[in-house]
Length: 125
Image (cartoon, rainbow, N blue to C red; front, side, top):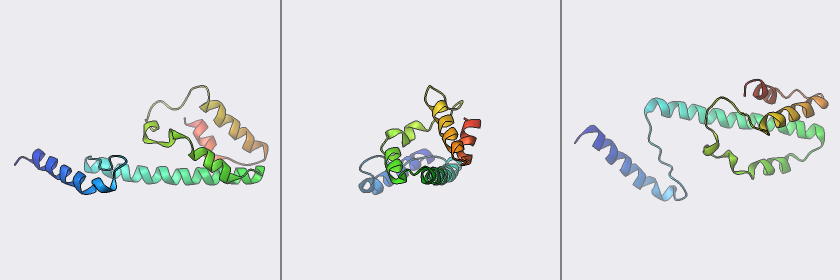
């Protein structure tokens, strides 16, 4: 049996084993070892960034007297947190992202809050 055929058989066997646990979408992603390693680190870093971002927004909300749970639920209700929206490129743009990032930075500055994550996002879109 050729290596590629063995690999296909192994992948098919894994898909069969994991199928009951992934009914809603394909959970078995096949990739090379180096891509897998970077994927693991990148996924954990993205989650860590989300936690840090939400902590920053929670601190801002507390200073402004805003209910962070309402903000969190509002953010989480949108579909754009999916993998379909995390393509690399030249940076963000459009009519909303730049003005909204700047508006939130100004809001933070207006209450003497240093929003480091948002400032970095603004400087390195």
